[in-house]
Image 1 (cartoon, rainbow over the protein chains, first blue to last red):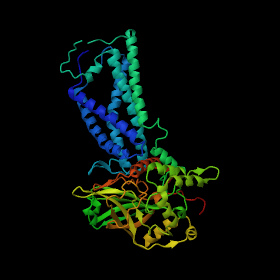
Image 2 (cartoon, rainbow over the protein chains, first blue to last red):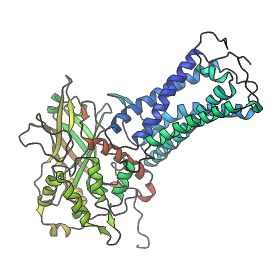
Image 3 (cartoon, one colour):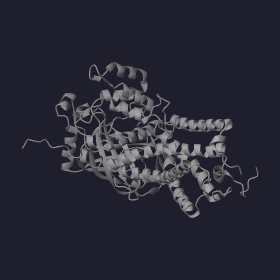
Image 4 (tube, chains in turn yellow, brown):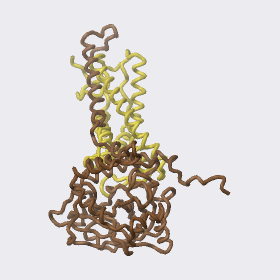
Amino acid sequence: MDAGARFRPLQRALHWLMAVMVVAMLFIGIGMVSTLRPRFLTLIAIHKPLGIAILVLAVLRLGVRVRRGAPPLPADLPSWQAAGAKVSHVLLYTLLIVMPLVGWAMLSAGGYPIVLYGPIHLPQIMPHNDALHATLRSAHTWLAYLFFVTILLHVAAALFHALVRHDSVFPSMVSWRIRSTVRR
Amino acid sequence: MKTGPSAAKIGSSSRGALALIGLVVSAGAAAFAYTAGWFSPHRLTPERMVNALSRRGGDPLGHRRNHSKGICFTGEFEANGAGARFSTAPMLAAGHYPVIGRFAIATGNPDAPDATGRVRSMAIRIVAPNGEEWRSGMNDSPVFAVSTPRAFYEMTLAQDIDPATGKPNPAAMQRFLSTHPENAPFAAWARSAPWTTSYADQTYNSLDAFRFIDAAGRSRLVRWSMEPTVPPHIVSRAELAGLGPNFLEQDLKRQLARGPVRWHLVVTLAAPGDPSNDATRAWPADRQHIDVGTLVAQRAQDEADGPCRDYNYDPTILPIGIRVSDDPLLAARSSAYAESFDLRTAEVADYPRTPPQPTGTH
């Protein structure tokens, strides 16, 4: 394999920026629906524009991924682990795009104005309908749980590559060295 | 670079690494569970609040968990432009703006007789041409019963149905009142305010304080009221009970069949020192009042298939030019209303849009 192959700087930058945004988003989401305190209003005011920002970046990132690809997985990786990597990455990309759309659609179906910031509103993308709202609202919660579990598995797998296999996978996203030589 | 070890070479250092990975994942999951409140049985969550509201009797499935019995109305808000000096809200500029509203009684039982509703409410949703919305839920009491979400929760628990009697335990409410002196102004109103036969003759008050932001960015603390234009028809409670269980809805339909019913939207400007975060305390009567326009109710429609049914009258849905104050009830209302809305939109089957027609009665 190409031992030094890494994700491109733009891909790495997007990955880490979005990692922070998505983890913040999941904690804000689960935190706001379980509180009656004034922070509820602050959290929900962050949740909506942050979700749309993630949607925009996710579409950009998917485009970069399709054009630029990804470094190959180590040749000696057991096939079930390679398959797991593939499935989890497809799932993560899907959730990055679907979660904000479900949230946006859910607010549309609930008859809520979709306020990003101040006077900046988004259009409704679903008809105002109670049953539709209920389905999307429930999907938003369950997809969030699925998202969080997938992220935990993703972190576990990344650390497994770094600490147990000591292979090229972890440095391909983490390393900030300019040249891809390994000095050890 | 190092090549990956084969499975056979995974030794004690790798066991340490695996333990570390397990620790990282567990810590992440625990932080999430903590944030979700799964370790905090005493945290006041919207779910606990709404469950408590649902336990007050009646069967609110498919309905709002509070102010469960109501009727929709439509009409418009005719702004006279006087509010535009104080707020950039587009619906305060002179003009006509469509309104979808709702009248209700404060009860957890969608079938409660209207005579049991000490507090009557008006909710409105005013929409500006640019899509900005102003939603407001107002009560006809001059002040609210409590000033904090926690106290509201305790008051709601005190209305729990006692399984032995099928009614709330009066001692529970007594206990609540004796530990919540801030309730006194509301209690005095509830004891002494005259009962009337109509939604149309009531003053509906925002209770919570808000902020109006003018074009220069100046922020003013305000409350607002819908003041009626028809005289009250005051009756005794006995007469009220004799009017039948749905007299408020019947009266509204009768009045609107004859013509529109109007209220003046009057904004009160606070003076320095007036409480912004305590809805149990009225502001002195000599504060500046500004009549900013007229609400014109034109048509009434049953809630089951009415336009107000699927709106959440969350009082924090505000246009630019109006903001929430630091009143802690506002965030709690927003959070709990959303929970109630999420529940009832999932219970469509329990509240048919067209009530089933009785069969075999031809």
